[in-house]
Image 1 (cartoon, one colour):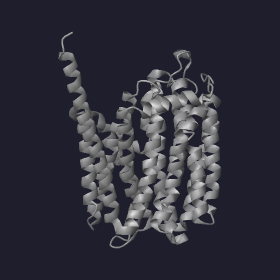
Image 2 (cartoon, rainbow, N blue to C red):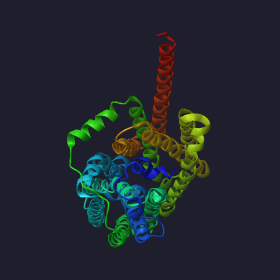
Image 3 (tube, one colour):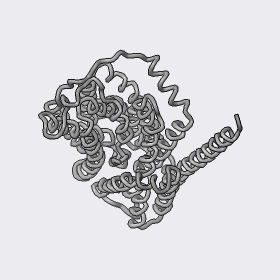
Image 4 (cartoon, one colour):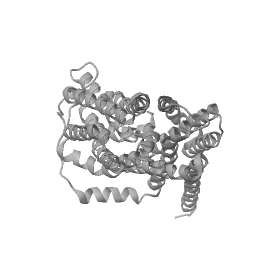
Length: 432
């Protein structure tokens, strides 16, 4: 299971089910064939650009607050606006790619997002900065689902997982390196220069994408059918299990978004007083997610889906409580536990979505992405508001409340499943 911070893990199973049956396997890309390496480099670069841009301001929030005289809650909207816009636009953007093409949608998304990114460092006010970030997030929504569909159509099935893995790796590296890059550049030259550095990185990645991505050979345009899309989405939202999984993903991301949006404010203040570059490097903790998300499959095999979720929330809660200490080592260990618990829980919930949906898996995964990024937006803003009102303890309280929500939903699901099994057993025992 790839790192869950990207949100892309929800699409891996869905993409593997979307291969065009009309396209002969012998005519598709695979390792060793012309175009495969170019395609891999292109989508890796696109992944780096996407998530470097999406979270570019997260490590800079204390500096943004100081520059505009804004509270943590106000500055957090520079992150929440981008992730919220992505959440709202991912489903319609994925539908547009069915009509106009995957390659065209990815190119347009990158061009718009990168162009906006060059204006972001010059935002004259916090309001302008938030507005530009919202446009960036909306533009970036066209890339993840289109990339997965492009791979499913152009790559041979046996090479699909490896190809998707490279794209997801680009997402992870972009999200982490963008935060670290902005932290160190901001320490030397200020937050505007840091955002400019991310913008230049994204421009370089977009150029690589443009010249390296092979033309789509197996895409067949479809018609835009809002009624059919609405029917599929309505069916998913009417499924009680899918609704619970969407809520679990949103609540897990609420914790994660709150913690990583606010942690910079805590670490630059006494008693830690860390420099901006060091605070940006804290995001190296994301690497823990590679281990915990990869272990999620083994946890489910040993403990079951609900058992794995209970372990994930327990780990997250322990990390939240440990982070309350005023010792840096304890805070860092708390972040490790929070990150490990979140990634494991998200991996379990997101993979369960694709297993639960028997039809319209792409839409089911897109809905999960929407819930996931809405949770990120809510967590970032509410976590900052809680920090402003009650310090780090307020942010931890919000996180524990979200964790309690996951536990409650999981308990309810366990009872519902038990009642369903008992009902089925009763019906089976009645003689004909």
